[in-house]
Image (cartoon, rainbow, N blue to C red):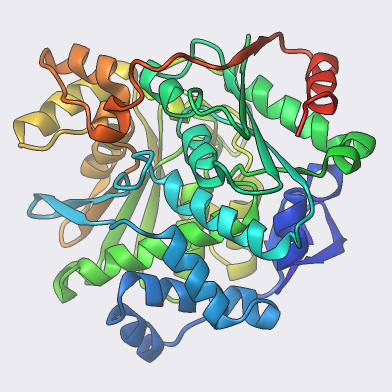
Length: 429
């Protein structure tokens, strides 16, 4: 598999290099040189397979002979040990539940596959994973790499801007997992990660890597559950499928669009954001004008400068699609809260991210279409918010209950690259 740097096409790397580097020169994202395609007959055959076998075939189509199919199958089997069920909400709308993994969020799929990929390609070299999280990435990455040999993980997150239970999931582990609460917002955390990768001396000294959705292995893994969703639908529902994706850093939507480039017949996508609506405004006006990030009740989407957006533009350019045709919309906290209550009345317990995706989908779905919205996190991960909206208690699943009373092990740090660099250099193995 060959990939190129979106900022410098002359930089070309293998899958193994991309997994280990994370980012290219000038913080450029890696993008596949070849976008594999399946025929309609091949798609039909894939849809008849079980989730793990199908996913291995999808990923092997990208990775090629760099890693054998048997090894990819083993990696996927180790990573995808939980389902991604579609649940009906209304006659023309369902939800793809992606929160049945160990950290109750969609990022378990990408995080666990990346861990398998890195162990496969690292050849026992020592690696430092540095990543930023606006909520769910931290837990998924921490649990995916917990106790793995020769790998240590450093996770930055905005202090006070993720839910207490999200924090408990990954800031109570210890061992090879190190967490830092940054006194700023997610964009500042992301900027610190990028500065670290720009520091060649630091990068080489500690074997720096990233596990954000900017890492290609995570992104490719996410393609697989779009096929899994499609496989669960009836022939009628498949005919005019519209998928609404709650969007923050836009990795999830990028993966969905890559599924479409492979031949999965999805009619259209909708990018649903909260008040951090840089992309919907851009699609309406043609002007890229990020505002200062604002805190919302859908905190995992509190991103005003989504890192994966250049990949989406590259897909549209490569496929000859019209970017303005991408569905889009945003919802305020008030609308998100009202929609959580609306879904509850329909008998479905959701949380603000999924609710926003449902709201924009419901408002834009046309006659004859079938809509799916992504349920990206278990409602209990936002227990305080959901309980406040609904006025009732949300029971904690075991994964959260087991950690709710554990002490936080996080360091606290100002938004200061020099301090972060000092921490990374002096961090003991």
